[in-house]
Image (cartoon, rainbow, N blue to C red):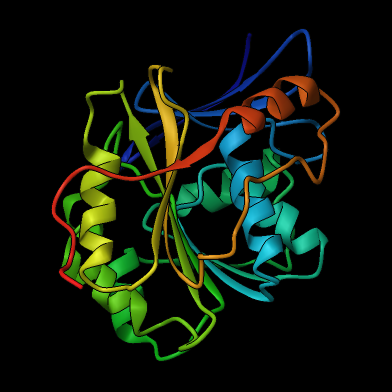
Length: 248
């Protein structure tokens, strides 16, 4: 692994790394790998491809992403004609994403806290993707039920969906289930896509018009790691979550 650049920011140090073998670029912040893409900007991270496929199934045309990292999901969506807005509190994230990760100029970037951005605007999106982390955890205010209620008001009434990336350390980590339970107090339809038995994984929690979504497949193969991504996507399964649910 080659270090390409290192940035000191108010929100932690960011390193840009490049793989000697594959040429892929890696965005690491606070010791955590937050993005990885091939030289053309296509993600090599399975959960990003899962979100991309779910959004394709939902036929979205206007997406808000809260949390940038390398911005590879935004890059992929922009290439298929989706309007993308990305919000991140760290201005360096956008500079790095454009310089090293291929984030297109057509992706609208806003320097703001995600909650503040939603409070300030009235625009309604087809989808909101939550992938904001401080170190290895989601900021508390972006994981509160009040925040999810605010997000619902910024989605299209009948067709909008919210998708959140929630890190799970192991099968006993109930964080994805806790997020799903909070969403179920706001939305009727909530689903959890996960791979049981794998440590340090990404679970996807989704709400809104999600009832008809099916297991995602690889739609845009990167130049490296496509077989591994396909394999992991094949392991994903929708599962019930633990915890309280809203009474019928």
